[in-house]
Length: 308
Length: 279
Image (tube, rainbow over all chains, first blue to last red; front, side):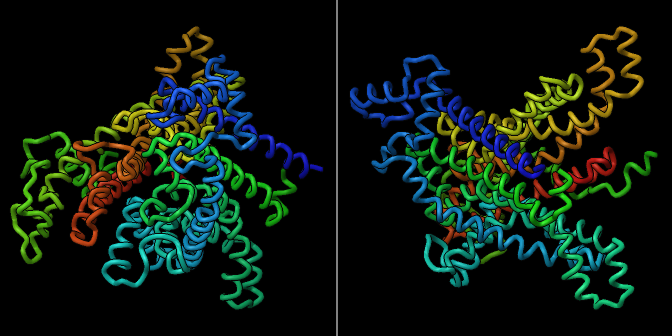
């Protein structure tokens, strides 16, 4: 019962956030004066301009314009991309799988580094792994993702010629962009795992396991990690959402055919319908991934579910 | 007391930050070369320690023979200006919003917190893209985007501090004594959150610099012929096979500056406001 109410409340909150995001996008698209100028190419004939004006009701009061925009958005009508001559939403949906694929691989990379480093830093607190991890974290936080991407291309694609630098293809095409995308959150994730491990290793049930003579390897990697992973799991949605944001830059560098690169290109060709659709869609994914985690972590940790 | 405050001062970080500030303040006068001076004869000139390098361009030259060191020094100006205005406005707006929310609570608080929640459902870089599409890209747009992204961060933290301060006796006494609300804000609340504000602002410097560089790299930030580190990297990307130094040097400038700002910020936080440790 409690769980159902919690679920409902989070769903409503998510919906409000998405509506709010659409309002923000709407307001921004009206900032630049005549929105028709944004929605049609510069050389559009008068008939197209008139058509846009009626379809988006640009002669009506602003709040009604917003409702029309929202109604169109709900039915998937963001207008046509005039560069690609197809509905903007179709274009975004076509590119979406590539972005999700990259974001998941970036997430896997960051977690695959953060978990062992975080665990070992906690177990050997103050040891060389802990100190080295901290140095890398400081460095990582100071390097922009796009520069990491460029350095990876420079070293592994151009100098060593080991991996492809551009486009989508086999698994090898995924490696460099995933590292570039997953690079930044590694530091934060390591810190989360480390402090959770320190807490858990100090708890009674671990002390009991030690007293019972359980092998240390089993204690650390099974009993302790299982509990210490919860904070990381609960934040995976946040990290995934961050990947979606980072994808705009990383996709552009690696010519990855995803939503991010499409939107960036659309900004340059002033393809506003695509920008609107892309940004709103990213926001929806953003909200959804945070929501899913909130709902999901009750499954991982019954204490949280009952506490709510 | 004084001695303890200065223990473990990150002098190296302060030195780097001072150098960046000096470059930004010095302007054209202190540059070894004109940063926009084309010299096709020395195009792709390698750094001084490599074969064919020259001491007059210690970090080498780019595809148009422009001196990279001079361009990095000139580019520091954009980083400093953007960081200054972005932090001033996001900190100012965020602190005010946080103080109002924390002090008055109720509907204003609920409304503003909801607004923050909604705004954070749009990834910052996506917000930047749509703003850049609607407005002209440039320094002002960069600052606007960063302020929109970060004011909520200040607001949330300051709100929490004010809520804790509000219950203190001296605030209640001030109110009973008939002190007006603006005076309570300025005289009694602001001094107490000042340390937090300073720490947040310092910790934000690195993030602002990374953000500006990313936007400029995408072509949505600083525009030619202005010089920014992100823009330099965006240029250098096109001839990445010819000149590795053009892609590494501005990146190192970004990294050193952010690293120093973060180290300095961490130190300041530990000294002034250890409660913010989790940040």
